[in-house]
Length: 169
Image 1 (cartoon, rainbow, N blue to C red):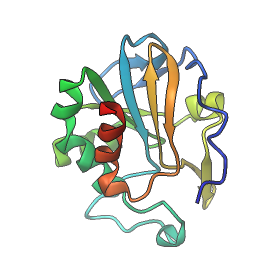
Image 2: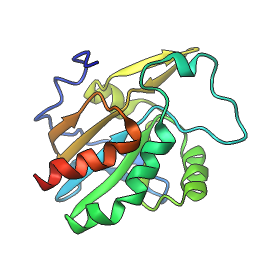
Image 3: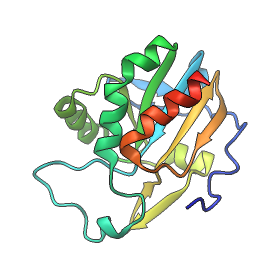
C-alpha cells in the first residue's frame, strides 16, 4: 500500500553525494550521464545467517535477493535500452561484495550505510532493532534528475520486468 512517503521525489535533482560501490571507488548519481535505474532495497541475507527477528512480519521487507536476481537476469535488456542499472542498500560494501559475487551480480551495488543519500532525498525507511533500512523503491534518474519513482514495489521478483515495460513505453 502506498503510504505517500515517496511522493516528493519526482522531479528532484539528486544531491552531489559519493557512495561506495562494490566495483571499488565511489559513484555520484548526480553526474551520471543518460538514464540510470537505481533500485533500493532494505537488505540481502546470506544462506548461512538467520534473518533479523521480526523481519518476515514487516510488509515489503522480504524479497531483496529475488529482486536483485531479477535485475541481474535482465541487465542486458536494460543495456540494450541504453540504461544503466545500479542497486542501493544501507548494508556495508564488504557485505554487498559477498552478495554480488555469490549471486553473479554484474552491476554496481552502492552502500549508503551512513544514510547520507537516504536522508538527503528523504527516502522512505523503516527501523528494526535500532537499525534503519531503506524501503524498497526504484528511481529512474535522467542526467541527475528523478524522472520516475516506483513505490511501493510489489512483488519484488517481477519488478525488473515492470521497470523495463515502463522504459519501453
